[in-house]
Length: 208
Image (cartoon, rainbow, N blue to C red; front, side, top):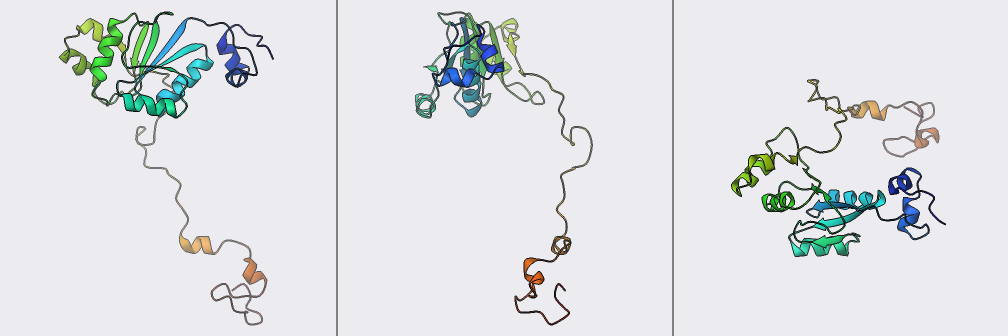
């Protein structure tokens, strides 16, 4: 089967990305786009997988050799590097997938010094951004620090009940007695057995 779309993003939309991944369809020509995910994690794995489907060359940057090996051994299909650097096939989009790692400042400094097209850090916007003091401590200029995007992704406006000022609305389980008295006889009572003991019920008391 030959792909009929020139843009790999179309392959995702038309459902043929899996066929390309498994070799049953021909992949479109390389686009020169590079996606760099920093720090091995489940988020980085999915990001690189779908980045490949969309036509990006996936690159994992993991300073820890053991974590990088574990990611590759688990089936990650991506180039693995220990440092962020300029890519030969074009400026990269760099996403830092873990802002708790102690190497955060170093990898971002390298990313800003490269020819990266875009640099972003995943994180909760409600907590202080750890990359700012990390980069400032390394002597990175404020205008360079401002190039780092955080948070990243689409704001879809979702809010929890707590965010909206409403009480917890988790569904409550019915009381134990209410569960035991659900309508309809159980198989045992329907057969004339007492549900408490399993013994045959007295005449006229089945189902009580």
